[in-house]
Amino acid sequence: MKTSLRHLITLPFLGICALGLSACTVIDEPVDVVKPFQLNQYLGTWYEVARLDHSFERGMTNVTAQYSIDGDKVVVINKGFKQDEQQWDSAEGKAYFIDGDDKGLLKVSFFGPFYGAYQIHDVVQNEQGLYTDSLVIGPNNKYAWILSRTPNINPTIKQRFIGKLNALSISEDQLIWVNQGDR
Image (cartoon, rainbow, N blue to C red; front, side, top):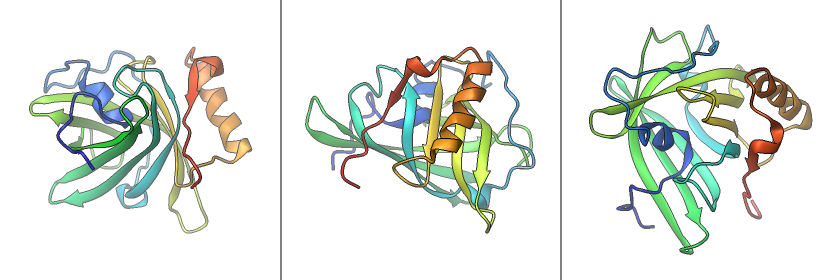
């Protein structure tokens, strides 16, 4: 897997960082975030089910993100397959809570001091409390992702998230449904 290509990476965090935000982490359009939020229930692997179009992810399939803890930071490893180049790409970033660790609001960086807001707008939990599906909005509603623990999302949850996106003036027809291959 090629890991040196950081200009075209997967998933939400890099796109937000590509906005060129400073370390102050600007949030152009705040949305309600999950509270109480439990990081331990968010850790692990997520599949990108849908996203708004961005140049840094354009043409990518099989997109995933892996979240883990290292000291006081959340380590994020994003990975995806670039169809046009027929190769895998990945990048490692770091995330920190912005306003307490009980809110789904983080700042994320893949490029040194540049951070972007990561607003966890909604989650679904299973019986054990593990977050199984997540709706994430960037610093504004030009950045949105639907994530799931599985390559396919339950249709009821899909409609729930689409309803929330519509309330933020994001239309379902703007979404790219990510091909996760034969997983």
